[in-house]
Length: 185
Image (cartoon, rainbow, N blue to C red):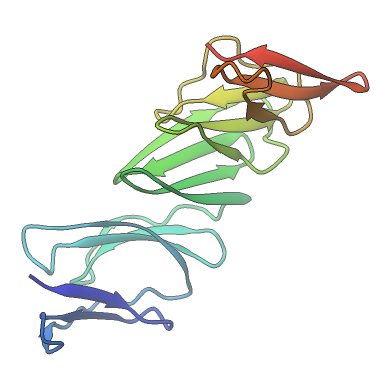
């Protein structure tokens, strides 16, 4: 067993249970903003880390310094969340949204540009991502698949709530000076 420590400068340290150096990683997480995922490898050196740099660029590399994927283009919007099973990253740029979770990346393109930060909704055991694009409000599941009824008629950020206290969630949007709730499928 070992302990992987990431210091404030993006340096990596691997110690044994007594605090002695067990492995010296060649990888350095330059300009680290947030660690998204750590995936154990067959050896310590093969353990991979996925992180975002301060400009929103996503990187994935092994502790031995070998890059497993090329860095993605910087994102316009990045949302990070803790969910059951790990850390979730939602990146958007122009008309594309990418959901990164559990070492997998799922993308979805829209006909029009995304006009606001993606919205993360934790519904207790299920989570969804909301996106406002030119044709309305899109609601996506963990696989970046749109829910039936998307896009909804909203051009403003929306919310999800159980407004009737019936243990059934609905999309809540402002419309015509009032509030409208649409039931989630």
